[in-house]
Image 1 (cartoon, rainbow, N blue to C red):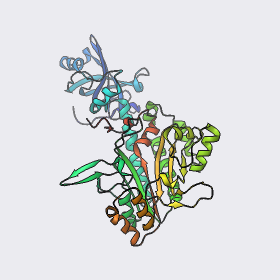
Image 2 (image 1 turned 135 degrees about the vertical axis):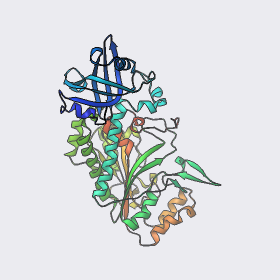
Image 3 (image 1 turned 180 degrees about the vertical axis):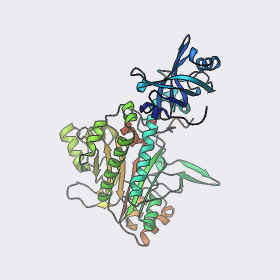
Image 4 (image 1 turned 90 degrees about the horizontal axis):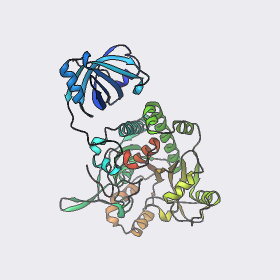
Length: 438
């Protein structure tokens, strides 16, 4: 057979009905009955049914078709027929069958535990569910790059090994660095702040590490952050950019991944409706008021919102919501104070974006403190060695301007869009408190 192969997606489009095609892929399902083999095969683009009849094919090829278990790699030639009973509405009557590799009995079958599937993640990636998720994820990250590049941002790549924390020392992964120690990055932010004084508008999509001892369905120890930093803008302006970015990502997924969303059970209409609505911004104080009056949950001012409280808050909205002005006392050292006439205590120039339906925070961002004195006091209060941050304080000594940024949790965003129960399915090989393999 020559190399002019037709993808399964093209065959399912109907362009090759009643025509002879050659295609290739892997056996997805198979069963045989005497002189006929019924199978479905998959490639990266889709799944199609094939029929192999003994009298229409060479004997050795029919024997190979009967031996071809699930995940055997094959090349076939045959006539495309329309059949509404078949997956995708088409099937191929095979006239040539070539087994490239006859697989052993595939270890993954129906109704196996999540733990077993994660132990065999290298094989489970081939499932329709994970294939669909990974296609959506690819669109999401591609949309992030397009969004920022089209707006004049430069991609800036930060170091993964860092000498000091950005989000608190309790969640740092320590790494031996020759005869010294360093840490895996918690965020690109400190380095991005250096970059904005050169490039003004920067973004990146890169891995991030947090040593959180959590076993929930929302936490990973290694995940990807899509971060941005921009000079001359305050945090409120940047939060509006965040709304535009998430809307753009959703529109790209709706354009390119409808079949995947449908197979994953995503409510597509819900996302379509979101694009036509304004996404509200409320203060932390207003959020507490909503929880008290509408949900009967009273939270002391100054306490951070837990997952359960964020979920309850979002029951009152049908779009994502930006929450601003969290208490300064629970914020990272680099988030500056903001005057507020309505808050009962000091607040920071910061924001979170919360997704609907219990998917929690998908964006976290802030303005960055430009005052050396307040930064130094905050770092000392957190027990940090100021000498580790002298280079960071230098950024305030030479031409400092207002600047802000935020980070999008890629896995949380993918989980929300794909209607996933567990964030572990939003990344190819999840890393958690109890798992760092395969």
